[in-house]
Image 1 (cartoon, rainbow, N blue to C red):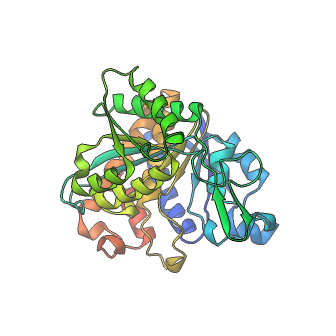
Image 2 (image 1 turned 45 degrees about the vertical axis):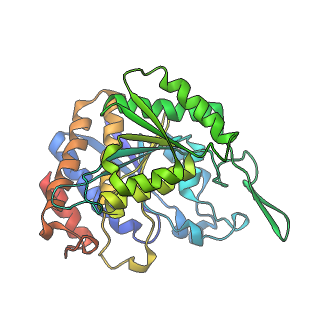
Length: 354
């Protein structure tokens, strides 16, 4: 069966790291007999220049029709206002495809020590469609408003359905790992919204007696990650907390440049690098493509699980193992990891390792 992957290069270093990732996917396809078909569509600044909008309904339709999406980083913070066609493609995909679970692993790799001394192997399970994020918390209009020139308000959206399904995702994942879930919140201050989130998470926890369950307040959790991130397995939390903690955990484990990320829902999934578009190094062939390569592996694993296809699962594992082998050797690293390889050479080396 042909798997159709929609490729959205994005902005900045997006085209470069996407090309390296496609080289790795093609190597995995050849090794494991996968039929991968890549379709491209334009988003971001290139789309805005051509059509006046950074994201279109046509791209949404293609994403929904595809078996999976490979999304490069975007420079959405620099886009024009919504009225001038500036939509965040990442946020639009998460909202329109209902990609409620942002799965972000943080794992230290052999030969590349974690920054705080302890080996790390945890996964942040971040709610992806609610919270304080103004571009996805409202049906119509943004989740921020200014009643007067001197007053700005932000609306936080927490729902029972959203909290329950992200908790379910976390506990299901924990059952396949070390069977421990840490719930992160700020219910001591946000008593109503985080109170509802906690209520839902506790109800799900009661259905998984085999999983150890604990709760941590967000500010304490940020400190505990620095002290010893190795004590955590699966961490479930709301949108903004998960965004911050996952970057912290990834950097502690080695580098944000290694941080994979999958946006998943009931029907769709988008592989996306955890880092930004780094326009300052765009076009220089020095960006580290590891994050998007690892994200592509997560997409194959997600497809393999849904389709019960062992070839996809083994291909995903092979990509991860290839990343480990290449990064373990100083000669196999990009500049941000202290090496000398360019983006394309690193991609070719990982492809060769497969």
